[in-house]
Amino acid sequence: MTRTAILVDGNFYLRRARRLRGNRTPTERAEELHAYAVEHITQRRDVKLEYGSRSLYRIFYYDCPPVSDARVKQPWDEHNRVFSKKNPSNIWSTEFQAALARKRKVAMRMGEVRTANMHFNLKEASLKKAVEQGDHCR
Image 1 (cartoon, rainbow, N blue to C red):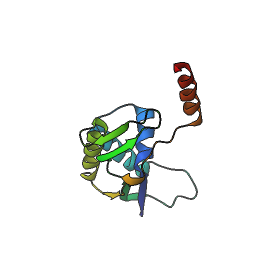
Image 2 (image 1 turned 135 degrees about the vertical axis):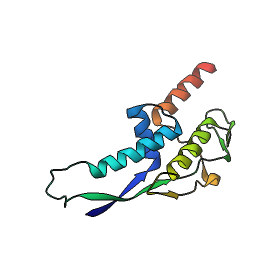
Image 3 (image 1 turned 90 degrees about the horizontal axis):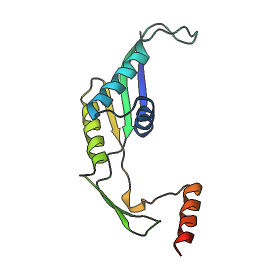
Image 4 (image 1 turned 90 degrees about the vertical axis):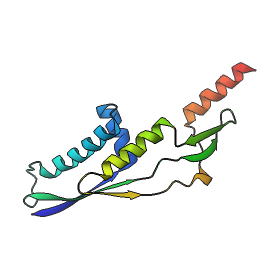
């Protein structure tokens, strides 16, 4: 039996899952990810490159803890955006990561966000829109 590891880019997975399957609680989303990985391993394939049956070795989940103590200057109004532990998205992310870490055969690989270099990137269309709206204010 072939043992298989699954690597999951946390940010990418959460964005796709939210778009394809809607909003879920942190526990439901963790269960969904784990079930999806196990299903992927156990489903029958008819591809010539597959070698017999497979078993799950481990799910490696790569992500960063949410930013909890940073201020970033907003380019459109020069105010600071404050990131805190009480932010609902930070609470959700923390609960999700904790729920996923409790799952069997899951290894969390947590990076870090360097808050000293954080900044907003505006898309060209958004920047043009902001400039056009600024012209109307004068």
